[in-house]
Length: 220
Picture 1 (cartoon, helix red, strand yellow):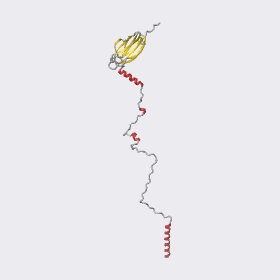
Picture 2 (tube, helix red, strand yellow; picture 1 turned 90 degrees about the vertical axis):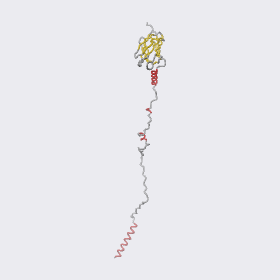
Picture 3 (cartoon, helix red, strand yellow; picture 1 turned 60 degrees about the vertical axis):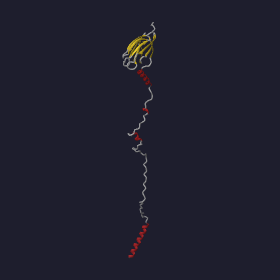
Picture 4 (cartoon, helix red, strand yellow; picture 1 turned 30 degrees about the horizontal axis):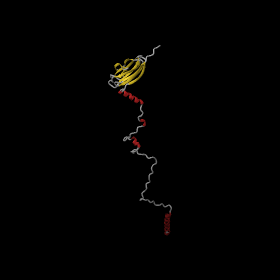
């Protein structure tokens, strides 16, 4: 009986040994390689446009708005001053120069036809009266030796000869400031205006007029 039990145990152990060696379900042992360093997978850069840091000194945004260094901006073409000159400015400049400096030659104011034997001359200083004085001469003959110009008009009557008459109004001085300045008006004997203007004369120069007196035809 003991022999039968021993044989059963022997065959059972042998069977289990073969079954354990050949079983297809045997799990392999896990081998860890501690001596091989693990390789780190490189990171893939993110897709898209890279952004510059606002702290970058070369950034154009900071150059434009930086309060530390502001470059001088080029002026717009529209802000540039026009290079075109107004022709009237040159004429005005010339007139102002003549007013300040006075005429350097006699001034001829024109020829006029008159049908009355006398004319009326009115003169005044158009600036502040400062002692300007003139002399009235007709055909080389002194009619008014000294006329002081005031702020109001003074009236002078001159007789003409038949034909052409040369009228000179001579500047005797230049007063206290600048040239001899006057406004004049010339009328015929019927008080019809012939001409009016201003003068700016230096001492010794004259305003000249040529007056052609023609007798009117007698009425039939």
